[in-house]
Amino acid sequence: MRLPKVRAVATAVPEQRFTQADLLALAGYGDARRRGFFEQSDIESRHLWIDPRRFRPDETVDELQERYRAGAVALAERAARDVIAAAGWAVDEVDFIATTTCTGRLTPSLDARLVARLGCRADVQRVHVGDTGCASAMVALQQAANHLQAFPRHRAIVVAVEICSAAYFLDDRLESAVAHAIFADGAGALALSTEGEGPAIVEHRTLFRPEHLDVMGFEYPGGRPRVVLSKDVRRIGAQMMAEMAVVLMKTHGLKREDIQHWILHSAGRKVLDRARVLLDLDDDRVRASRTVLRRYGNMSSATIVFVLDETLREASPAPGEWGVMIGLGPGFAAEGALLRW
Image (cartoon, rainbow, N blue to C red):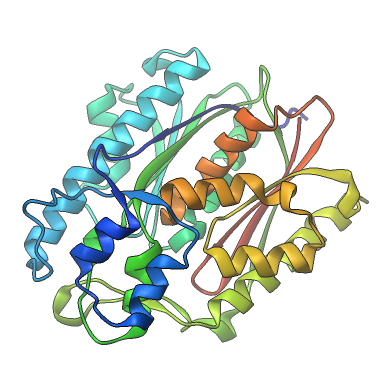
């Protein structure tokens, strides 16, 4: 049986780049504790679909939705076009599209809009994964991989896009300030087929802990999205990353030292710090995740695609090497894949 392979990776961010100092000024926090969330985040800059000359903390629900729609469609299209070109395909050679987002909703959905804007075939198959949080790119990747298992001659793309800036909510909750200090906007895309070069997706696994259902997600007071982000996420997320890694390795008789590449969701500084200790990894093994966090912040579902892209460019994996790829999301869930080059 031929395994699905990641043939190409592409990313896209808004042109507007902000330092943490810029965003702290826009957010308007004056107390030391909230300033500390920005200053101690290990994030240098983020890209947001925001015009700083027009930004207001009291934007209406309609204004936030329009920001989401414009940003999500534009970034998703750019990433999709780039990944198709990087794979060496024509648009009409794409047989399956999986899209995902959690920071807004569109009807017709994001996949339908991409089909129209890209000019895909009328019979292209598609799926949209919604409201699955930061782990949803991994869920969409699993759907694409499953499709290629059923149709091994097909070609698929996965597109994850998030406009986290459309969930800005000014209130007195500390978790709102934490969210504003780390989340960002961006899109990531993957091209998959069972032919050609690229890391093979050897195994997919899901680890779900519904007892932690309330620690992360969105709520919508007055129809306006507001992040729910408990401080327990740093502990739960890191622990579930470690558990997921064990499950993936054990299935194929692997040990930690057999894994050369760790593609871990850049959830935040403290999550990565704890995960590194639990997995007994040196700093070099989490370099890609830290680099993405520093340059881009946490772009929710798109982030894991950026970490894979950074790994491919900087680590230059060799044939036969193994990789573990893990995303975290509300539910609470860890979504993982075992890769082999």
